[in-house]
Image (cartoon, rainbow, N blue to C red; front, side, top):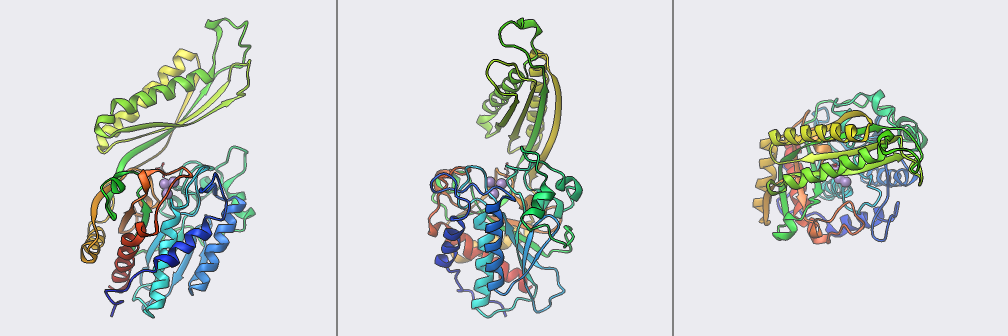
Amino acid sequence: MSISSDTRADISRFWSTIARSAEIGPGRPGGLSRLTLTDADREMRDQFTEWCREAGLKVSVDEMGNIFGRRAGREDNLPPVMIGSHLDTQVNGGRFDGIAGVLAGLEVVRCLNDAGHVTRRPVVVVNWTNEEGARFSPPMIGSGVFAGRYALDWAHGLQDDDGARLGDELARIGYKGSLPCRAGEIDAYLELHIEQGPILDAERREMGVVTGGYPSHGMRVTFGGQTAHTGPTPMDLRRNALVAGARWLTAVDDLGWAFSAQDGKASGSRLAVWPNKAGILSDTAEAVADVRHPDPMTVRVMAERMRRDAQAAAAIAGCTLRIEDEWSWGGDIFDAELTETVRAEALRQGWNWRDIKSQAGHDAYHLATICPTAMIFTPCKGGITHNNAEDCAPEDFSAGLNVLLHAVASRADR
Ligand code: GLV
Ligand code: MN
Ligand code: MN
Ligand code: MN
């Protein structure tokens, strides 16, 4: 016996958890600046842990600070069904990106509790560490180590702009757990996330069934030059790293425009220059950019163009060049059967939904490499995200939450 087919999620209960989370780590008005492993992140983790315990979940923390809230199953040794996302935000982040997915998982277990239903398999709600990559790059680190994509020591050694190490910061906030950060067998992973794009909102859809992600590639490029006086230094003797970085990022933007008719994107997102002071040429410029495109071959072409543009920018400015390929992801990675379960639930419940591709990275991408994975998108106003104006109404989650609830319940009972 599973839960009754008309069991509904409690949207106002879910909404009040979102509201509480939105008090922790405020950013610009209405938004959040809850960077990973800061004191604000610790406060949110403490709150999440408390909510898990109140819901009767057994909480554990792994060596990457990933937090697991586990609800026992009738056959408790079976591989669990997992629901997760992230509670960290960007510097000028919103209240929903990632957060909605973790708190949706919490709402699912609260509904199972209300129904007094013990599923056959355990159900685990997860908060993954450092999804955003805003403080420690690359993004999706906690899930990446869990899935075996990255080594634990390497991840612990990542440094922020002030030289703080990820592993030390985990320990500082009390979330360097003892559980090995290594996936066991997982029956299924589901992640609900706001779309972070305008499609569902523009089409007035109530949810999206995510069929995969745009193939994407991220690169970090460091240009090395030489400090010198901006006045007397002859033009042909300059090695201004700032110029190389600026030229490269301009070329990256041009690349995005060249592929925009096919929905390709190319974005510069960081330019860190040293010494970054008036009157002195720069000796270091570190720039980060990424390309995304629906077609995997084309994204490889775009990445190659980014590489060549970096070489050209370095040559013109007389700078040295170091290119690091930081990440690549995307493709048709989600599980057809689990995705079909989500689709069938959306149909059964009568929502206005569509298939959609993700254009942002998600922890689900890493999970998809180790277990059957599916994602649900919910609409957000105008697709605005990574911005304090990110906005959703409670009703925007009705379809996603209820589909997630029943998809999890049916999977956990089979
Ligand atoms: C991470 O979520 C990204 O898409 O950059
Ligand atoms: Mn996110
Ligand atoms: Mn984000
Ligand atoms: Mn993301």
